[in-house]
Image (cartoon, rainbow, N blue to C red; front, side, top):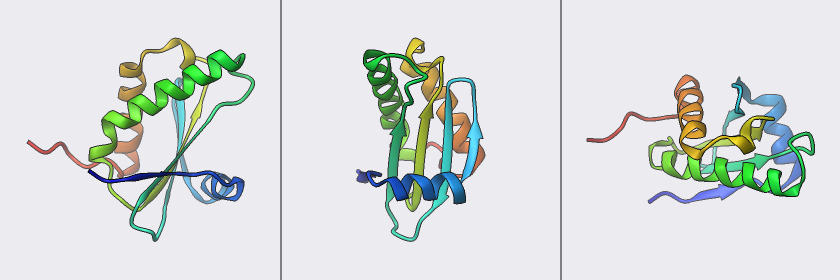
Length: 115
């Protein structure tokens, strides 16, 4: 199983925002940027617009679970930043997964399912 590394530094997020390509949906916004490391780096952000700490944490948990289910199919060598939107804390992880799958496929990051 491939290891996913977290984006932690502010400049890493800023680089994804400015140089990456964005894919906007009603539940989540995805920023994708190719890196030269050969590993997938993932960051999840939620702003205070989402709600209180409980709602922000739920949003992060739901996005993290949706990504975990898709991670075996993600091509290595990308920086991915997921930004929660207002609807995110009220959605189930399966709905978020469908949205992420659509956005990542559109970005060309998602590989086809192995049979």
